[in-house]
Amino acid sequence: MEHRTLALGIDIGGTNTVFGLVNRRGEIIKKGKIRTVGHTIADFIDSLHEGVSPLLDHVTRTEIAGVGIGAPNANYYTGEIANAANLPWKGVIPLARLVEEALGLKATVTNDANAAAIGEMNYGVARGMKDFIMITLGTGVGSGFVSNGQVIYGHDGFAGELGHVTAVRDGRSCGCGRKGCLETYTSATGIVRTAVEWLQDESLETSLRKHRHELTAQIIQESAMAGDAVAIKLYEFTGEILGRTLADAVAITSPQAIVLFGGLCHAGRLIIEPTQRAMEENLLSFYKNKIAILTSALPDADAAILGASALVW
Amino acid sequence: MEHRTLALGIDIGGTNTVFGLVNRRGEIIKKGKIRTVGHTIADFIDSLHEGVSPLLDHVTRTEIAGVGIGAPNANYYTGEIANAANLPWKGVIPLARLVEEALGLKATVTNDANAAAIGEMNYGVARGMKDFIMITLGTGVGSGFVSNGQVIYGHDGFAGELGHVTAVRDGRSCGCGRKGCLETYTSATGIVRTAVEWLQDESLETSLRKHRHELTAQIIQESAMAGDAVAIKLYEFTGEILGRTLADAVAITSPQAIVLFGGLCHAGRLIIEPTQRAMEENLLSFYKNKIAILTSALPDADAAILGASALVW
Image (tube, rainbow over all chains, first blue to last red; front, side, top):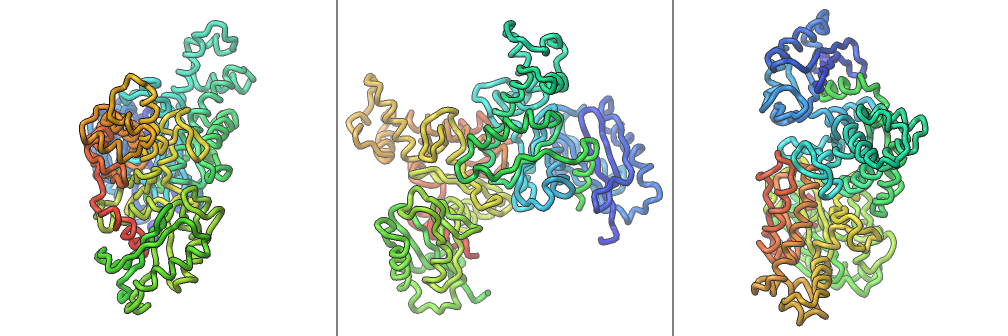
């Protein structure tokens, strides 16, 4: 297999699907993008085939080791996507098989957070680490746990759902039907929910008020960076909940580091510092002061492709 | 190494240390016991040497593959016990090295809950399982996480401290200096603390009241089995907290089963049923109705020896 030096990485997101041809050094040689929305799964596979084809021109099939795919709710063991709330296709989709049939290449799938973890381990800040936790703070909260150099997939491939541990008992309603899940607080949508709640207090003085009907995580970030005290406190509140939940996760897998990725991390120390502080405050003594909280150094646009492609190796 | 067919298993508990010579089929050929308390570590090692020696008579050294030791706060990577609250020796004890020097045999250590997990995987109800969680409900609460057939040790060997995740935010004070740890509620001491709190309500009618100054988990169990409604509710309360904490742990490692072991499990369905119910109520949909809660079928007295010995293989 030594001559198979390329992998095709595909990341299926709620809006767009990005893909790229990646070599063993983690360099993206060619890349492309199609829309995820507005397709039936059959149309999507056709469109993916069409989008990917130009990348495979001038490349012999024997150079390609396979296809790695990251997608929400994708299962490493079954190759399926099951009931993904953020994708247009309902029910169970045999994604790996459909891609294999369309492209004639062996395909492996995993969920997007596990793919991100594999990408960081191969090409990013977790290079050389055998024990770390990857947390993606985007529209939702995803996680990938790496222990002894391997992703924890669990018995059925569904491990690593830190976004759905109960961060606040009897807390906010979550899309999953339960209450108080981490992602209802520490995702891009979660911080907006917190802001909307806080703004009901009319006495609160903040520049966010003028955006109250169109609040986004981006607006909160800009306000915080401009020094708005309420926006800064929103990050402190969010980091507090994330940090104490991370402290519990640390007690299970005892990682060397926690790697944060996704939109909320663009706020940098505004989110990192309160997260680190709350984690340390809640850690059992022998975990204290030795777990790094890192942010991904991979470019957002490429990280998903790199992570998916690294599944192949 | 095929001719090395025996392992010496040693379990160091707060009161007693038990040991046994075990063959590859998990049969204890000979066993013994010494007191753990009242020794300096040097005295303890001498006493252990003396206790173990009769087991090694008539056995050639080349038959013995090694020594496996389970002990509170024992670290697989370093071979040390560090600041074990329930053992008489303070600070850091290089346990593996001391035992190797005394017995002239290669020694491997791990904490007692990890040893129990390895024992169940080799000889008990978790035989053939690659993903499960072991929970020991004794004086404290310990845990061992097995993922993809391997114990999760974590970066530094300290993984698997489910007894110290926060089960109740700002809850009971724990010996570890933090608040609301699982073990302050769901250990033998935890259920007694709950009973003592409840008995402050003078209107509560229960047979436990006459034991109020000498309550033990054993007395609560006997009362519950005799039909005392308050004692039964104590198990329901305890199981509720254990079950919802397990639901969060499941979201991280997605196990096939959870294996319970230790004194509190002797109450059987009194503790299992509320635990299972609370876990199911709190599980994310795709984990529901597929995770077995099992109790260890190994005899209490032998399980620790078997688990420790299985470390060797």
